[in-house]
Image 1: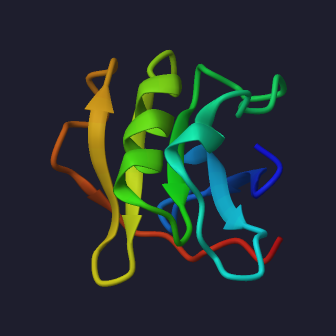
Image 2: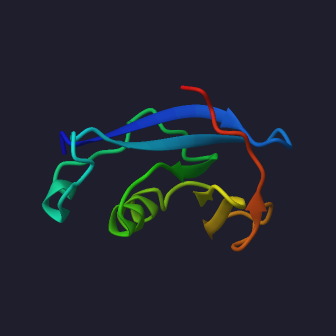
Length: 109
């Protein structure tokens, strides 16, 4: 999926909880991708599954759904909402609940 770049950044919530920040960047000049672009899209092999993952970036809902599914092995998965923070949508730990909103500042990278 050459039209989409996934950048993995080690980061912490404002409370200090470590997590992996997965930033989506659509590199097409028109900013549009097609569902067929999912073929071959891979998350970095360096991801730390024992930590949570926050997915962030401007992308279609179906790409977010795909990435949440692919990040299932993580301790927890959240989707970043500019108005709220990271909304936890999946969890495998007692420390973070589905529906929790984690406050964070977006990483610079």
